Image (cartoon, rainbow, N blue to C red):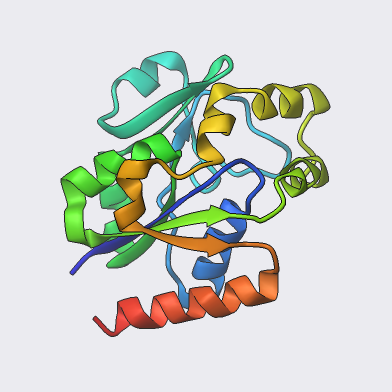
Length: 185
């Protein structure tokens, strides 16, 4: 059966790090999402994101999409199909608001990880460390979307596997167990 590991949580919690680990250790590809924002240094089109303009973004079929500031982000049915063509187990990073659409449409094909930390001040430090622009960091930390993602929505609790990313070594052990369980189903 084709499965998708959905990873959600606030900015800076380590969603990309988790997805990269799953890819590097287990060959689990990440579903590439779409954005209208400019590329950051070191990003690769088609691997980091599909970089779109407003017109190309409108033509896609989204499970979910969101606007952060002036830019749009979304995950499409087209991108999921491309990932599943490569591997029956894939991962995807989404906003918490987008999780429900995947659960509704894909049901038991979804394994939902809500990634969090115990100390929220760690998140700002991680955003600074990854090189985000200071003004953009402040905008993001004060956005309604960021504040929303700090907490798991009540309707998602029953489907969530909460994983605290306070210590990377402990997180890797937890991820290894998750992958083992999914591969043995």
